[in-house]
Figure (cartoon, rainbow, N blue to C red):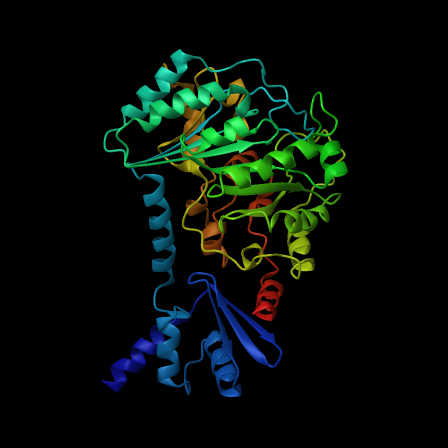
Length: 436
């Protein structure tokens, strides 16, 4: 039996998902597959771990090795872990009981943000009742559907609030067990009348974008007729918190190198107002979806990591620097996920809305651009990219934005879509350890 046990031990290997960091007289070990952080304080443990990492098992306590195996720090078959990640993500992509629809009832907008990736899209179209019928018909055609997630999008979707009301009521009436809806808005038109209707429309989550404090926001997100939209948006958010306290409010702050400091002041402003613990303020880094026509200093992945690490003492929650296991991914790769434009056109990604060449079809004819549809579903797929599957960060990275992976496929820029911890894991581990 002892001989057999030794053979099993010798078959174990040090997991590629381990990150060792010596810090403050102890050894920290983070495993990206389990997302666990371990602390080892004795010299015996330290020496044992370093031996195991080098492939040397002789003289290492068997019970210690067994504990490490239980926590997947040493493993017998690493390919099995990779395939488990693949299986989890693939099963999510092809779940027949779930549908995700992003609906843009209009691409018209009352703002003129210079970094908008919908620049040049036809702005005067608003969805009509015939297209509402087609959407209801599409959802009804999916038999066995249990979960329906709707994202109201634009342009500015509140410019077509009557369509949101009408179509929401029709979709909620369908025999779906779970219905959830999110509104993505600039917040300018979110007056008391509309807020009071959100709950009955089951719009329980709102994403509202603010680009900094008053002066910064008004410069970076100029309203087409009001030079000071900031005050009105904040007033509307105050009303939202008061009239619909159970709503989940996500304040998105688009940042680059010029306005990043404003983020923390906005967080301080809002943290006392939110009654729902799921509400929060978060930074979103401006990226170059289209050729840059602005003077903004965009932050690449390295800049984003530096920003996070420099400001750890200001961050309100560890999720901005402690990794998160990614079993889900961008819904652009989901079989039952579509973006619907105001003229019944279909897309896989909302970054494509308004661009005719990026439409995969329409609600009348179905999928007519099978080439682009197939590209989104299969090309540049991180699950079948050896660079990704061989990466130690694979379990905490979903391969990045599907839109950007397709765009970058031929120009060796895929590092830009990696998780911000890549290349900086030691710094993030030390920072998280200090925060405990």
